[in-house]
Image 1 (spheres, rainbow over the protein chains, first blue to last red):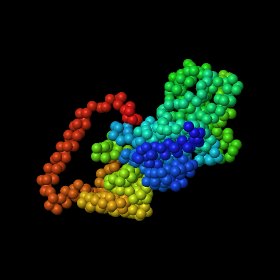
Image 2 (cartoon, each protein chain N blue to C red):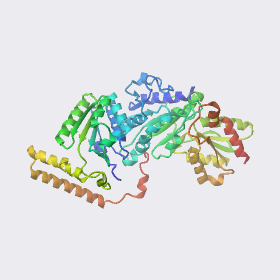
Image 3 (cartoon, chains in turn cyan, orange):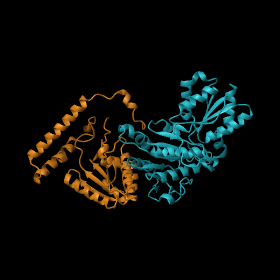
Amino acid sequence: MAVKNLIDGVREAMLEEMARDESIVLLGEDVGKRGGVFRASAGLIEAYGDQRVIDAPLGESGIVGVGIGLALNGMRPIAEIQFADFIHPAFNQIVSEAAKFRWRSNDAFHVPMCIRAPFGGGVHGGLYHSQSVEAFFMHVPGLKVVIPSTPADAKGLLKSAIRDDDPVLYFEHKRTYRLVRGEIPDGDYTVPIGKARLVREGKDLSIYAYGLMAYFAEQAADALEKEGISAEVVDLRTLLPLDREAILASVAKTHRALIVHEANRTMGAGAEVAALIAEEALYELDAPIRRLTGPDIPAMPFNTPQEERFMPGPETIAQAARELCAL
Amino acid sequence: MPGHYSWAAHRVISGSSVVTTQVLHATGIALASRLRGEDDVAAVALGEGSTSQGDFHEALNWASIHKLPVLFVIENNGYAISEPQCKEMAVQDVAERALGYAMAGVTVDGTDLFACYEATYQAAERARRGDGPTLIELKMYRILPHSSDDDDRTYRSREEVEAHKDQDPVEILNRQVVERGLMTAEDIAAVKAELQAEVDEAIAYAEAAPYPSADDMFRHVYAD
C-alpha cells in the first residue's frame, strides 16, 4: 500500500477499469490531452487513445445525452462534468432520461453510466466553482449518488460506480483532491455503493457527514476526545440510497445526532437523515437532532471572510458537538 | 400517457415526452457503433418544433464533428401545436440549419413516400461511407389537430385546413402505387382491411388485458 492523494484514487480507478473493460469510455471537456482541468484523467489518452478518451464540445447536456446513447448501445461511459456548478444544463437528460429508462421500458433498456463531477468550496472558487449539488439528485429515484472522502474510497467507489448497471452520480470534493491523503490498497478492489463507513467509534454523539466534511468531522472528533467527549463519526459515502441501518445503529448507541454538510441547509441531505432518525429512532434521542450546514444564500462567496463563514470546519463542528452534548 | 413504447428486439429505443432528448441518444448510439467498427446507422425522428431545443444543436454538432452515422429525420408539418413555423424559426427550411454544422441537409416532399425513401437511402449510404450525418427534412401539412384535446379552430382557419386536405400522404401513396402499376384498387382495399383487422385485434387484446398489479410499479427502478 502507498500513501496517495484522493485524486490519485479517481485516476487509478479509471485507468484500471478501462484496461479491464474495453466498453468503458471517458467523455468530457478537456479530459484528453489536458488530462482534465484537475488532472484527474492525466495519462488516460496516452494509454487508451482519443477514441476512448473523448474531448467533448462544451455543452453538458450533450456530454450526458451522448453518454446515455453510448450506454444504450453497449458501452459504459464515464461522463465528466468539469464542475458540478455546470451540471444543470444536463439536468433534463439525467432526471428525465437516465433515471427513468429502466423503469419506463419495463427493464428493456438501462443506462450503465457514471457521471463524475468535482463539487464543493473552500478553494476560492467563488459563486460558480464551489457549489454542492447533491441534494437535487438525491430526490430522483433511479439514480445513485456517491461522494468519497478518502483516497481508498475514491478508488473503490468509482470502480463500483463504473461497474454499476444504473446511472451513478459520483461527486468529488475538489478541496479533498490534494488535501486528503491516505493509503490506497494494492490490486483490484471495490467499495460497495449504499454502505456508510464508520470512521471512528464513540459513545457520546454521532456525527454524520460526507466528502470534505467527513474529513473535518474526524479532526473535530480528535479535538473533542481531548476534552472528554467521545464522538462517533459516520461517513455516509452514498447519499442515494442512504445506509439506513448504519445511520440508525449509530444513533441507537450514542443517542445524539449531529449532521454536517457544506451544502445549504434547506432540503439538503441532512434533512433526509434527520427525518429518518425522527421517524425510526425518536425514542433513542437524548437531545434534539442538530444540523450544521452551509447557509441558505445563493452561492459560496469569493472573499475569504465570507467563504470561511460559509464552510463548516473542524472548529465549528466541534463547537456544535459540545453544544449538543451539553443538552 | 402510455406512449413511451419501445421494442428492444428491433432496436426501437424507449422515448419520453421531454422533446429532443432522444436526438443526443441517437448520436451516442451511433458513436458506440463507430467505436466498435460496426456499420449500423442510427435514425432519430423529431418534429420541426423540437429543432428549437438546445439538445438538437448539441447533437448535430457532436455528430458532425465525429462524422457519425446518424440520420436526423425531421417531420416538418408546419405547426408546433398552435405555433406556425414562422414563430418557431426564422429559416424557411429546417434543412438550412445543417449548413451551420457542416453536414448534409435535404428538404423532401414528406407526402411522397418514394421521395422520402430515396432521400433516406442516400443518407444511409452516406453515413455508411463515413461521410457523416444527414439532416432530412420531410415537409408536409398537419391536416388534423395536434391531439385529441387540441381545438385547432382557435388558431387556424378552416379554409387553410381545407386547402391542404388533398395532401394526405396515405391518399397520395394510394394514387401513386396505382399510377405506377404497383397495386390495384383491390390490392389497396385488401391491405386496408388487413391492417384494420390487425388494429381491431390489438385494441380487443388491450381492452381485455388485466391492469398490472399496483405492486408492479416498484419493479425495475434499479437493476435487480
